[in-house]
Image (cartoon, rainbow, N blue to C red; front, side):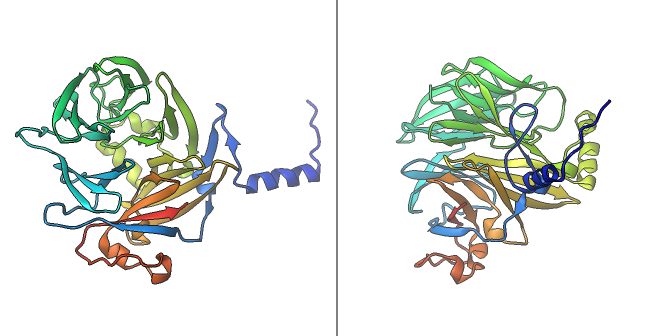
Length: 365
């Protein structure tokens, strides 16, 4: 076999290409990002706007919150309390309790996930091995209920009116981790076969920007866009030494998580896209310590950078909750907001007391 000599100039080009944070293709043609090779950004987030959430005795919020936007309002669900969806206007003024759990009229037995709509609100409610969507109008009245064939634990609405739902790794309740469901609750298409019985994750899998719906899941290194009839891979991560080994999926779940915690592991916990950029929250956990690698991809030049936060470092920026109007939004607890330096905040930023509800930080990213 003959070997072609490699000229020095060619090696220089290869080294230059390797040092740039440019797009790298996988075998499937997906952009591949190597977590440990992504450039660390030293510049802080630039806060553009601060919105404090009004505080009263009926709406005290915890520190594990899901937030969803509409053009005129924002809705917050406390994942620890799990009893009510609170509504605020776009200035943070409290509008009331949109949907509550309970046995009374207009209440639901359980709130698993929710979809704000122009008509009101749709609630995914699960009980036992059953799931249904309960539809509310803007007055808080129940106007419809749709029983689902598929056991969904997270849900979104596609532009054509179908639902897309995740059942997570909940074998044997769901044979496939993603389903497209029609308005009558019938499953019309499924993707991502469940091959292993492992502990399912209670996560919010979807994000919606304009009419585009994006999907991620905890044990998957790929992210996707969902259309009415397709699951389209978008990006791929290589977590290097934090990659979850294949043997984990065949282990007893307690032994498996003990192994992961000792060696360290990474999972995708957040994924949002705007027209110009994509954001990925990568949780890396080693020996019980968790850090959030916040990866930002410029879709124009396919260059990526990241910031790393933890509960003890830059905690005001530890909980990203979405993208709105090309800005990344964090929800910061009042004590963490108060630790920010004056030069980090825009002029005329609001005054907040330590016991107040969280504030929303809108940042350039």
